[in-house]
Image 1 (cartoon, helix red, strand yellow):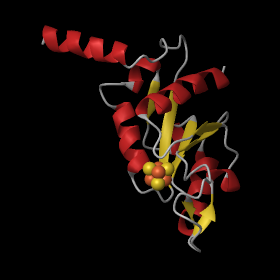
Image 2 (spheres, rainbow, N blue to C red):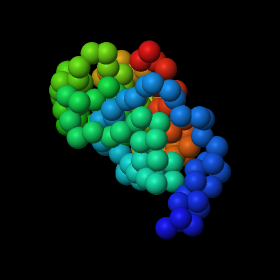
Image 3 (cartoon, helix red, strand yellow):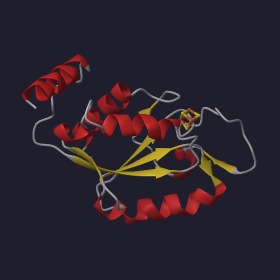
Length: 152
Ligand code: SF4
């Protein structure tokens, strides 16, 4: 067990993430608005034991009522416009919106079919932009750690 913990500590250092923020935390609520699941895969890796978002005070929660940040992935489909607005409306103030991935940022990765209403920016005020298709776990972690500063 000790060897395993030492190995995990080494892996965390090799990820070269910034030092943990002091005195801050954010609860994240993820909403998939039409993703191919690539962004979710990387988000799952970010929350896993290698990057371990919890050590920075970042946790993924099940309800927008408990969230500080709404994490949007995918181009927003017409069917997801109202659920996305409802999730945002349920969040307490102050609240932030993060667009995770090129689709959420409106880069048009999957073209412009009639079922796509637009980017996250077209629906909600986006505060945090995390580009990439998909963004790497390190990029996601760094952007979210930086976001703690926005709430101070
Ligand atoms: S940005 Fe890339 S990985 Fe993410 S949902 Fe769009 S196509 Fe998939």
